[in-house]
Amino acid sequence: MTRNLKVILEYDGSRYHGWQRQREPLTIQQVLEECINRITGEDVRVNASGRTDAGVHAMNQVANFRTQSNLDTIRLCKGINSLLPKDIVIKELAEVSDSFHARFDVKSKVYMYQLFNNPVRPVLCRLYTWPIYKPLNLESMKKAAGHLLGCHDFSSFCGTGCDMENRVRTVMSAEITSFDSGLIRINVEADGFLRYMIRNIVGTLIDVGRGKRLSDEIPGLIAAKDRRRAGMTAPAQGLFLKEVKY
Amino acid sequence: MTRNLKVILEYDGSRYHGWQRQREPLTIQQVLEECINRITGEDVRVNASGRTDAGVHAMNQVANFRTQSNLDTIRLCKGINSLLPKDIVIKELAEVSDSFHARFDVKSKVYMYQLFNNPVRPVLCRLYTWPIYKPLNLESMKKAAGHLLGCHDFSSFCGTGCDMENRVRTVMSAEITSFDSGLIRINVEADGFLRYMIRNIVGTLIDVGRGKRLSDEIPGLIAAKDRRRAGMTAPAQGLFLKEVKY
Image (tube, rainbow over the protein chains, first blue to last red):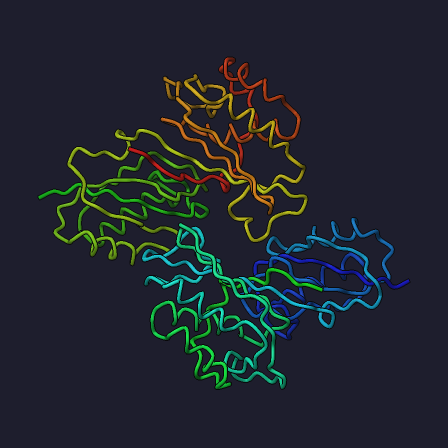
């Protein structure tokens, strides 16, 4: 009997060329599929909620795969985890209805981006933040983030070479939280994200925070549907897929 | 004119054989002194508030050194930081009175230890926590920590081969904070720490949290002045020198 299994994964993307299996460099999908293969003896294909790019991390990536293995879910989970490298782990593994698909069934996703705003470069959080040395105006950034809310064509934030036809997405929330240490977390929830969308949004918010743009320029920037109007792409190391909702 | 300079350092101890200069393996003191040497042209010796052991991190280690360099403190700090590797940084550099000594003048130090209490191994915080898979009873641990407060002979928590004669130290606070993620932080402030003291305390608190010892056994354990009575030495990767007070 074939079972449909859903997994929740945490990974440190630093070493990987993103989620999706490719011919050459190491990817998370490839490593995971090989470990599942060694446990089940099957040539499984794992569907994730979406690709994460090279260097991007996940706190709770969701994926599913089908297996004929009789192993109970606890053993299967322990077995696969024992083979996975230190920077990937399955946090949960459960049998789900046959119709569940980790990508097609997504209702929304939450991404978190970590900045470190301090004149001194970060050391202990250097692997998971984007350092911004000059002071940021958080209030302007929060105001700018507010303009992202709602349903828009996000072409201005879509990576060049993006072949997605429909670029309309709904942003449900965009929140910025700062900590005494200089750490700043930007959480964005949307029904879907275009390629580099969140990193281009963060790059643009940084421009606002540094006074290079006004927060009120954001609506015009979105309306322009022109990638050249938005800010730089924030580096991958600060980005985390935080949650996938179904 | 010789100036006495105080520095506050952040470092990731993972790669280092501790603070103190040694003949062979890489140490933080050695790397720092070499960078200062390249900037000032002098063969300086840096005094830290105390050694940190191999693999132990620092959020705010304090040290001082003397220099005849005329460079202003901002330039000196930037210059040294530009040479330091990514896992060491000077957060502050300031001229202080000639009498200041980073070790002799310490009033108290605060160490933080990070546990990750979760049945699933940590990935994103794996480099800076000690994973404990079985559930911990936090209330018992907090009660046990309370017994450490005050002035005691801490021989029972002193690493074997410790040649310190006076092992009496005063613990001003010992607090345990838990987070939803499974992260647990243990903060201990004392007027001084014996070798491995904090890591042996953490190992003992884990025994209490797992029900292997009662929190009320701590006073007897301290009174015994016998290292064999305490728990295991917690691994270095979870330990941070958080603050040094003068």
